[in-house]
Length: 78
Image (cartoon, rainbow, N blue to C red; front, side, top):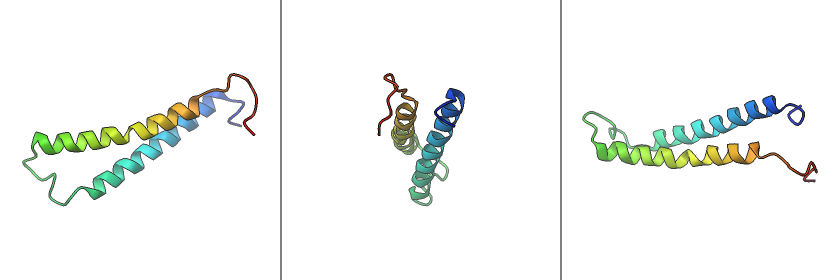
């Protein structure tokens, strides 16, 4: 079904990439030391957390780019 419908393929790509991103973000949030985000939170801690989460966002973006890459020759990879 995904091969014949570009809309369905795009929806599956976005859903799968969002799942991967949410999983990685949850892992990072669970690994943040207890009390690290208690008030007052400085820009140093927030910037480190933002940098970590932003770096992890590259993974689902790369997955989406790979999954959305259409075959130009029309041949199967197998």
